[in-house]
Image (cartoon, rainbow, N blue to C red; front, side):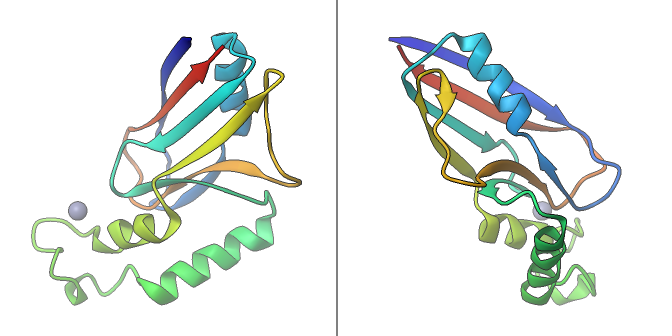
Length: 138
Ligand code: ZN
């Protein structure tokens, strides 16, 4: 069995962002040489997500509005976590959007359903963050 590991680095200008990382993950898969197996991709921070959905800008604005309704960024004082930090909303948003995705690898390709794309969801950006890609198989 082959095994591959890589860390992808992100540093967004804004506090929140959705980035389509599918091309980067596909590059990892090519580099791994693995044709059949499983690919795990996870955020290595508790204020960021990796999730699968549609690459459609209207939907991304809907996600932003949906998450702001559930866990609004401000006022910062509404959260018990915000004593030394101001990122309680980011922890909550990350929990809603999830930590990781697992994708089947078939014939050397990500075995997606229609419209599936992998996104990095940043909820407390403006600093360096990491995403792990781990691939196992033959
Ligand atoms: Zn925090």
